[in-house]
Length: 153
Image 1 (tube, rainbow, N blue to C red):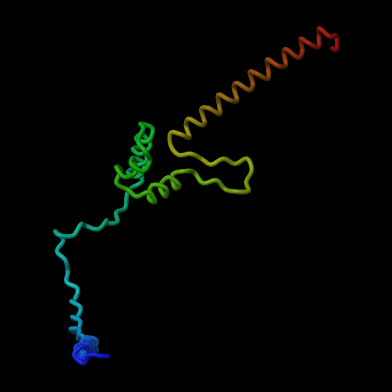
Image 2 (tube, rainbow, N blue to C red):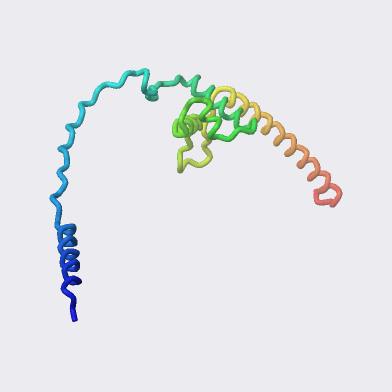
């Protein structure tokens, strides 16, 4: 036996749920702000961009020597390059340009080093020729002595 007093609150509760679940109107967005025109930024607030600068051959050589001495002193290559104020790419380009270029396919030709290295190389080659001649004379003398002992002469 259903009690009618019990049914009323159920109906009222059902009606309130329907009101809560009713779709609400979409929230309106405010229109987008127009993009601001690019304003020049004062130089003081912005870090200065790396200015491309041409280095003379002498400056390049000095920086390469500086990097080399720092690396031999125990510093890492990256740190030495950074302390010289150049990029790694620049370092390797300069290093590649400083090396004499070898032509492929030509046998017996040697690249010509620059400056003091050339004088040192010439001096070493002269000494090498002198020592070879001395060795050849010594070997001829030993060979002649052995032939005499064996009676082949």
